[in-house]
Image (cartoon, rainbow, N blue to C red; front, side):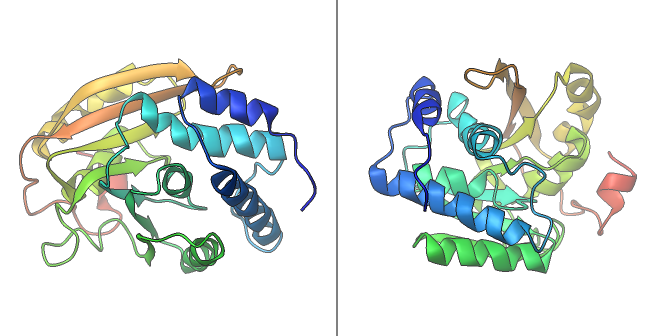
Length: 240
């Protein structure tokens, strides 16, 4: 593996008060190599430049520390994880997390399993399925302390996918790439129906960049009514 310039990466991590061992840094580098290699044969990411992957995928994923304390062995579900963001960077940086990655495309899940094995990560699994599939009571409903998603969908739809998985007292955090005040207003009623409440909205730019990000924290206050999530595709076609 050729030597990479990591100075900016370390500076960015410092802004988030994240300290990595050399082993963890090597895990990030290996992840990058695996991502780029696999991207040659399947579409995982449009971002392939080393510096850009560090900033727009790795640092962006880790920005969750701005709104969540990730020090303990909390259970985290990443819905629509794609190439593993934000779940895998969070697992590398905070090894005590118990992470479940969920994606609807089997080829991506196979890639995630390769990454998990190559990086020798424990307490992490990658599952193939739609968000609606595993939210049943006998599967993973209300099992997680924290659910996260960088998936592109409106907040009402994402909340219907994600809140059913969150324990009462836990949180769902949606990563957004723009100012979303109108979207949060529109989603307010849906979130209430699903048992949640927006408790925090944190806007910021990623370190040493003009890349704007927004983290919306939704606390799970009550159980999600059993009819949600509705059958596959309904939440995106007809948001609450």
